[in-house]
Length: 68
Image (cartoon, rainbow, N blue to C red; front, top):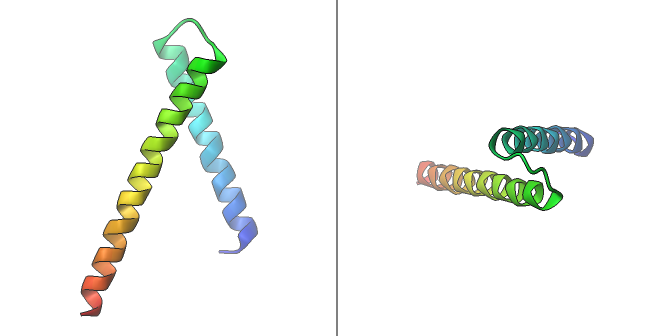
C-alpha cells in the first residue's frame, strides 16, 4: 500500500473509534462533557493499541518460528 492509502485507512479507523466512543458515552452517561469523552477515547485507543501490539508480537514470533 502506498502512503496515501495508509493515511486514508488510518483516518477511517480514527473516525470509527470516534463514532464508537460517542455512542458508548451517550449510552452510559447523561452528562456529556469533553473530559468524559476524552477519557473514554483514551481508554478505547489504548485498548486498541494493546491488541495491535499483541497481534504484532504474535505475528513476528510465528514468522521467526517458521524460518527455523
